[in-house]
Every structure is written in C-alpha cells, then in structure tokens.
Image (cartoon, rainbow, N blue to C red):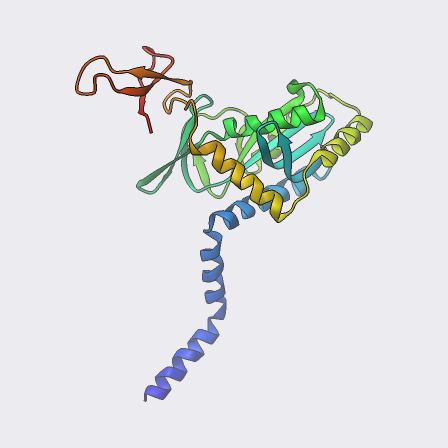
Length: 259
C-alpha cells in the first residue's frame, strides 16, 4: 500500500513537472539582481520593437567614469532629437512620489517601502553622459520607466512613464538636434568612453556605491527634497542636542536625527 502511494506521488510530480519549473522561476525572479535584469530586458524589448530602430540607436548597461567614482546607466538612446538617459524600475504595487521629493514610496498590500527618487538618481547619469559627450546638457533627456505591474497613485512628471509609455514619450520629441552623421559620431564617443563590462569593474562600482551612500554629509529632506542643515535644540528634553533640520524652515519643519 505504501509503495503504491509513493509511486502515485512520483507519477503526479512527474506529470506536473512544468509546475515545479514555473514555481522555481517565480522564486528566482524575486531576487533583486534577477528582478533588475528582467526589468532591463523588458525595456530592451520595448526599445527594440517599439521604436524599430527608427528613432535612434541604443547602448545598454553603460558604465562611465566620473570625478567621484563610476556610474551605471541602464540604457542610453542616441537620436537626432537628443540623447535619452533611461532608468528602469521593475516594481509592483502603488507608487507615490513627486519631482522634488528625495524619497518615493512603494505600497505593496499593507506594507510600505521607501526608495530613492529615481529622477535624482538619473540626474547623476545625465551629468556623466553630458560630460563624456561634450554636448549641451539641454539635449540630454532623463526618462524613468516603471515595469512590473506598478501603478502611479500621485501625479508624475511627463518623463516618468510606465512600460510602453516610454515609446510615446521618446516620439514626442520632434525638434532635430543633430544630423545622422552627428548621431553616429556621438554614439561612437559614448561607446569608446564606456568602461569594459567585467566582474572587476562591477565590483569596484558596487564598492564605490557603498562608500557614497554609507554616510551622506548633507542628507536631503525626506518631505520636500531640499537640503538639510545642522541645527541645535534650544529647549525641551533635547536642549543642546544637534539634529538635521530642513533648510526651508519654517515652510518645512521636517527634522531628522543625526547618526
């Protein structure tokens, strides 16, 4: 009897082998690195099939050297209408944020998570690209694209889009900045300046990120996004103690404890 039950279980497991594989793939896809890679892959497909190569040429996974380390850019589209620096976010749930806020919020069921304003994150990428290419910063366009089933619950700037909205945003630019020959020259400069994709380069990049984000000298206000300044409490239980206060006080009264 026990042998028959065991055989039946094995047969059932073999019959639904696809379910085991699907479950394993879903579990692996939850790892941050895999999740990020899948998001970038999806945007690659959008750029490839949505634009069809008619709106410019794309370089993926670009790493550039900057004055204070390296910066990694998900996608750079070089076109006659400008250079589009694209940051990918593969996230689920509701997304809350504004252009000036330093931190945005992801609400997933009953839990909330804070993450860096991707527009600020992409600003560093914009500067690096403009410096490397030696072009007018006004011709560098920042775009943040969300994939993965997320929904915006607050008004977003025009350059923050979901999925296929990336194609519509890029096509909304109609004023030509460069000729085809200039596009090829800019593309060649970008490719020549990009660092070699290697394990050593990525390890150095990750270490640099850890150092930069370990202890920021001047944090941003989590409420309005302005710079914070050191202040000292003059009265109350914490009189004499220093803390971070928003530089826009009294319009913004947000505070933050010193580490």
